Image (cartoon, rainbow, N blue to C red):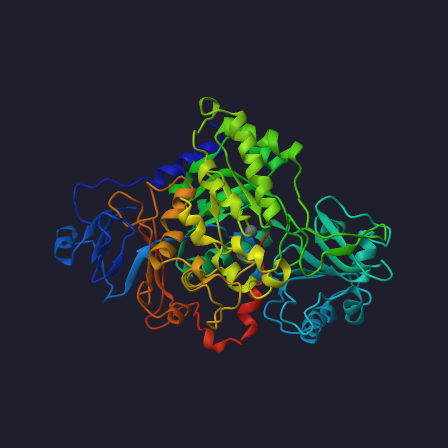
Length: 598
Ligand SMILES: [Zn+2]
């Protein structure tokens, strides 16, 4: 056995439940307002936990027989307990990096944006790169992208590269464009766009999707120590919000190796359901080596390839069937006006062979699809692969492939999800921000299949819920509120917001618990409070199934339990992360929501 394997085996065995002669529990919760998400026993007062499993769910009286001399008893005093919450689309390392980098979130005008970047530029050494993330112009006046010339005023010498909150666009100053070799004559790459001045054709500094690589490839490399720090920060933040698992859509084996290291050292508590990007070498490695399933006491799973099929709606990179309503044409690299309907970012000849191999090897695929053209394209590709590889040749007959975002879908395509067994994995918070600008991008007619949670549910599929953090804040209470209210965080709803697409509270709770578990092949292991399942529990400060909508946003996490271990406990009367929206400026949440993804 190789030393690594020995170490891994030892680690795995240390997570196995320890047998004792006694029936007593390690942990007992009493006086709870418990929503189990188990239809056979929807409500309970008490839960008993032994090792990493739930051994009892029921009444205060009946739980007594599990109380022994070494049992920790937690009196919930009527607090609400739900199954440990999961975020089905959460860029885990990105969340940590957001805590570490020049954070441009929440800026409400160009002047403040430039002032904030300037403070960083003034500290930079000659020729040092200045990078940051999180800006969004939608609520600036006027709502236009910043340009290279804006940035040149505050940084004539140092290269500057600032990523929009959605990750699908970035603005570079002239020094950065020069390093990247971006000029008037630069052609748009496949799956990307260099935005140009409508008169002169000069690049204005905005680079969309794959065009970002011209500059991004010259940025200094992030060190492993930086990423480790980001992981530790993201772990802390996530468990304080009540998350017990995040499904991390994309990345590489470098991330996986760091997760393994930190699980081994006990520094990472959160469960991570990881994917790697494909088509390409990372996906090939997963297809070759096979999945990692339930490692470190089911802390780590890797069985999924993440594909990105188009851009985002905010930057007009989402691939649409018809041109953008608010900008149907743009100037192309040849100086002529061209049709503007977004772009695909993956080619069938690269994708389809990989999909077929994934079916044969039992690997899950999840694909980012925002626009109605991208959604139709990916359903077509999935369908071709499923037809080409019959069930008898698949390692897993029902592969549970996912469509991440399923954001703007032609109503004719909605029934195809149930028919093909494709899971729409959606982000409620995207809708309550996007719906401020989606009507102008798309026109009223196309909003009929946009963020259509309820239409999907009625068509016979489940809808796992995620936040797409750090594109959005990544707070489960915002996702829950957005799903049941379908209003922005001030309670506003506008024309074309389709209130009939909101979901019930029971459905919203499933979006954050049992449905992501199903989408991760874990519905028998997690996602409800049931005897035999892993003891993942989230305890909340208010009854989110009953309180007025706006109060959901003020609810916070009191305690987080992962595999029977209390990994977070709020100090009485406080919370590490207070979600108190009354303190925030009005626009603070809007910009965060005005995005679609990466
Ligand atoms: Zn994403």
